[in-house]
Length: 138
Image 1: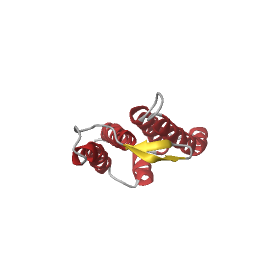
Image 2 (image 1 turned 120 degrees about the horizontal axis):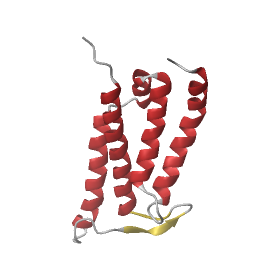
Image 3 (image 1 turned 90 degrees about the horizontal axis):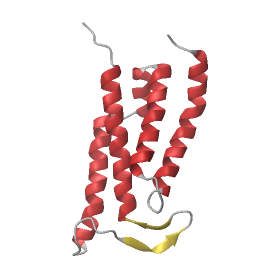
């Protein structure tokens, strides 16, 4: 059963939840928050969309298979560890830029790792959700 009220509310809530997930992601490299919590909020936004409009519409909105998100996030996390490794430091040692960016502060490899976690959490959560939500066809 499709609800016009839920569909209308979801159209407004989806961008707000995605912006809030980005806020949590970028806040987390200096304060509580980060990739895991931000990824869960973003996945919850897509879950709400799939409840309101159906799984197929949510997949169309996402535009990418969740498995590719998982692989991309793992690649970001690996690259963040390799930055220190190629600087002849211990693997996963945090490295920061010398420049102070407005709104973000000093950017570094921990933010890249958080971005990887963010993308992996979205991918895994949506893969589970889409797999469970699909109807079994005879």
